[in-house]
Length: 321
Image (cartoon, rainbow, N blue to C red):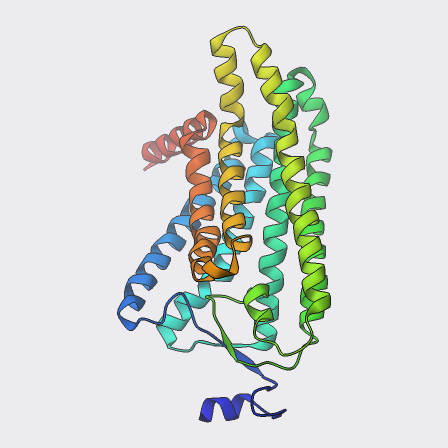
């Protein structure tokens, strides 16, 4: 009760209050699960950080990886590290300090950053699918089409578009000052569970979120990402030798695996019915923790160039040591 009084400078009525901070409930309220969840999340975060940093270092240090595909993969690693750090740090901090509160401003920043980074990742995967299309269908023109300037412009476009598309949601939500509860039923500040807490009229935000999320963030990237694979598959079918087909498919398999994994998790998180909303936290954890952890593993285990680069760099390290 004392916490509520400190957090409520203006009492609107018995159920509606303005707030200075929120309480992030976390993954579960069960006390006996807290240590296990902390250790699990901490281990996943360390693997995510280590795997993506390794990919970044290999791309920077090995000139064999200085090509468009790995340039975009490096951008993807930056996004994965940032997304995991922004969403998972609250679980780790709340366990270490026992403080589950988060200031409203910090919560809005977290919401904006998460939405921006997820948007950027979808746009980046779309660009990477066209990079694979040019590599398979136009191999002789690949380095001319996907030159350094083009890659820089495409990557910059993804970053800018990702951070711009999230402004409207957070901008509208930041104007809400009336809440029925201060507890966010999630492990980070996400727009959907936060909309359930406000007593303000959310019609405009819900409409914007639905149409922008459905078309701009779901249908358009999904169609634009998978459309090049129609032409890629058609090109692979026309290859006469089995070795040629395997090589062409191998070129795209890592990216296609990452795309299917991400869209499956996003669909499970945001498109599942409200009746099974209790599982949304689990899907969100997979989306923000497991997927960023698996991405570098998928690219390193399925990619011959990355494995050879790791052998070269680690063998050089062993020789010098």
